[in-house]
Image (cartoon, rainbow, N blue to C red; front, side, top):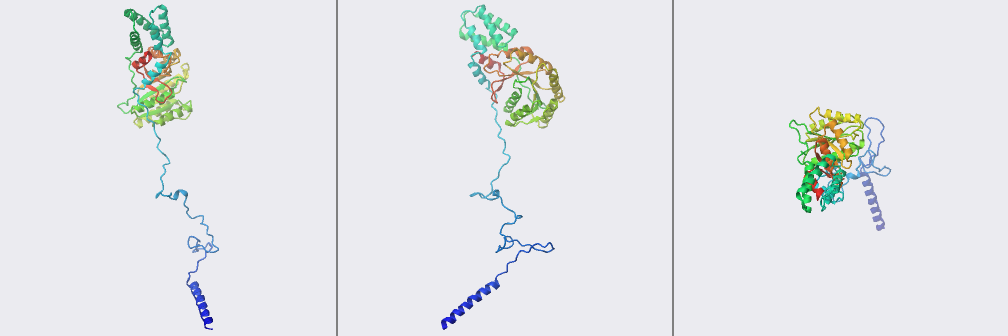
Length: 400
């Protein structure tokens, strides 16, 4: 009987405890649907109170969310900073000094070089009239030109007659001296690329016919000047070909040089003038202006080229007008040089495709034709295969 009473008492105590806990627990506030009236309150489960049975536990749409980028990576205390515009790695152009060493090696390997053929002829035991005719033919084939060829042959005949017997070393020295005199080492081959005292940059206008590598030459020349610590601005005044402006812009970007360009078909003179204005504002040392390739017998195009030069001269004289010639074009290159010089007063020649060719005599011929020096030579397809022309190094490459 006592046992039953004890069990009943325990059961009553348990029920009383459960009832007390229910009375003491805070009542959960239900979400009140918005009624549209003032003072209405909307409580969100999972935000204002823990969600219960019947509540939607999905995070509300207007709740701020964290993206994957907001979450820290394992072992990383702070988010990584991402540079969305990484700095362009600029190329460092090869120093100009010594570039002709490569040309010397290429010419010496060429089995058709001018010097090699002359040395073989002049080293014969007996130099009769037939041999001298071969010497003359060799020079003419190398595009030396009729006048310079006759002068050189006459001097060689006189000196060989005085020497009498000849050793190979004497023949080489003799030929080197005469070729060097023919190339005219006394001509001033420096480029006028120094900023003027009044703050105006030097202006270099580059002209030529289609296919000579003119735009590429402008890009390579920019690299030469950058290697000499010059500040350069490029002007893409070849507005007839969109590809030309794109090509020139790419050359400039590789060495950190800005390019001024206009829309396709824009006035070339206007683009050239804008480039000069930009170069002045940026305090550049030199502005290189690329022009459209044109045939020397197209009067309208040549007149337009003259206009480009006249517009640039509103700010001051154009410091250099460089004519780009293909060394393999021979006598046709002389015709081009003559016409361009009449229109824009060429001050210097750039010979491309000179390496490994038997046409090295064009150096002599074009200088005689225009009375201006060859200032730069193209040595190959590489970005730094453009070098100042050095007469002694060139002749040494021929007779090596």
